[in-house]
Image (cartoon, rainbow, N blue to C red; front, side):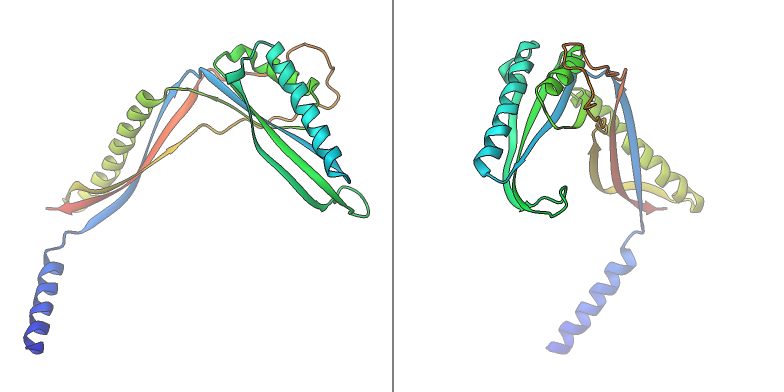
Length: 225
């Protein structure tokens, strides 16, 4: 009985391998451009002190002042939120002896569809005493239509590559498996100037005319005669 099963398994495996079609794997990309309608800014407030309560109090004061100035500039409650609060006790390597201190971090996330306010927001953050602007992103809030177009272009690009290569030996291609990927435009790095004047003049910031919506996909195609 064992011998019969083994022979049957070998015959089945050989039959499957003989009938398995060759495949080709390619990556296709598609990019569509559109006018941005929304911006977001991530600002970080960091305070340091030997006393934890002092570090927390200083951080809270800066955050509250910055949020107050943001609202004064015309932003609403739903445009502003705080996130990623942390309190750590560690060495302060910015000083010679590296003494232990409390580090408090809090982030302010600003999102608005009024692109003209981007420079005003930076000014409010600067005047509020915010330490660091991590990134500024300009994007399209509702990207579905552009994403769909980008995916179609990515598939057409992948199929073109596969057909071009397979056609060398007169093979035709048909899709077997598709893995999708989507990428957002890279945020703009920005560093606040510590010497900036503490007035209400908007900090100059160039808003891009277009942003790219890019999709990529890895597609495995069957190759058949």
